Image (cartoon, rainbow, N blue to C red):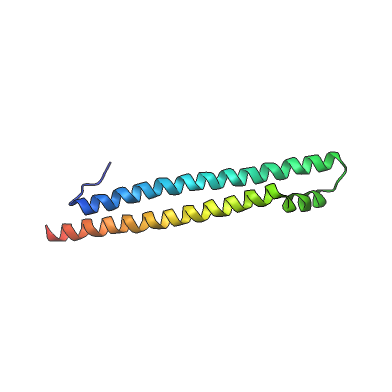
Length: 108
């Protein structure tokens, strides 16, 4: 159910908040994919090392030093930060829309 708007400025703020929320969700999906890539790579590396007789500790050290592990963690952090930025911007726009709605309600 969409809210009843009192003016175009309120609607624009609400619509922008909705768009920013969609962007934040998309960034969180990217962050989750990067984390899944990291977890999968870590497990595959552990299994590969186990077949070669390399200990679990050494396998983790090798994985954490790999470019794939570093790239996945960097991507996860990057997309998490973007999602946080978009969520904060959406929150600010929702608050603005609610303020404009309440302000106009008080006038009516």
